[in-house]
Image (cartoon, rainbow, N blue to C red; front, side, top):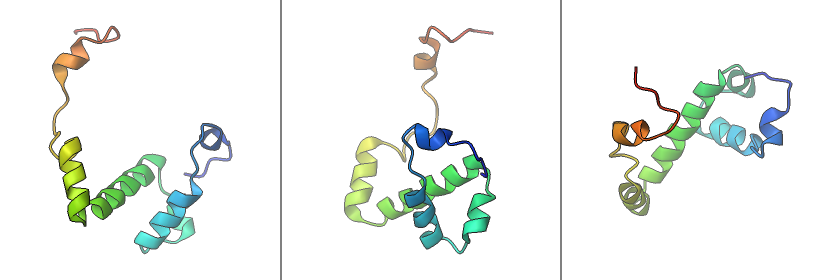
Length: 88
């Protein structure tokens, strides 16, 4: 994840609260988090946040409403309607 460019910050993404959150939730140290590929960092962040939401009845109800847990497949018909989609 080491990237000296400031592109994520300039796009309005504040990483420090996410780092602090993952440092608190995992046994990883700062260096270990910094060495993660960005996709892995984001995946861990998503899963830990989901686990926090799932830990309360209100959170589970919210997830059920938004169908985050129930969506397992892409909506192929919607994807095919996109102008950028080309059938191979």
